[in-house]
Amino acid sequence: MNGTNEDARRSRSTEAFFGRRKGKPLREHQTVMLNTVLPELRVDMGAPPPKSLSALFPVAVDRLRLEIGFGGGEHLIHRALENPSTGFIGVEPFVNSMAKLLGRAHELDLKNVRVHDDDATELLDWLPDACLDQIDLLYPDPWPKKKHWKRRFVSTVNLDRFHRVLKPGGVFCFASDIDTYVNWTLIHCHDHDGFEWTAENAADWLTPFAGWPSTRYEAKARREGRSSAYLTFRRV
Image (tube, rainbow, N blue to C red):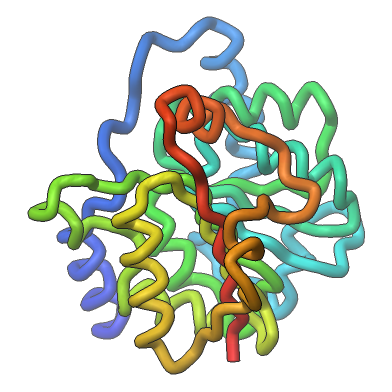
């Protein structure tokens, strides 16, 4: 491993963008999915990235989209079914969530989905320049305590990563029901020279993204009286 990659690895070891890795015991079917389907769909980062990421998929794709922290996978599955000519890479370190998505992807025989089951920064650093059309960060862990804000995924260094891997004109989409994280993201993207907020009026960021499927996180927020914000930033 060269010095640059070693420095990146050490830097990542101090980051903590996610909490626990596993929750309740897995059911037998979920264990089978992890043992059989995960190796088939996992992005192989032991090899150099292909010149075109479309080579990761067994079907022809003309767009490439990354979702970081897909939770139960409802959104990613919905989008993959809705856009069969788009290749999706989903990142989720939480084992139970990964097992759930793998089960649905296997059941639906989705060919345009690949996954990474560890830290998203590892994948971002492996990806080639200007390879993605879109990055989705939807209801990420808000790390609500101020002393933990440094763990929020939106940061200057991660926006640099996004800027490198997004194509010119590509978009970063962010959704959250936590006001402090919404403001945090607006400030960080405003201060970053590589992104412009696409909203033209207040309704733009209060209106769900086109084709948006309601998620369980969003439903929980509404039950608890919180509204959501939907932010889109264009890579310049």
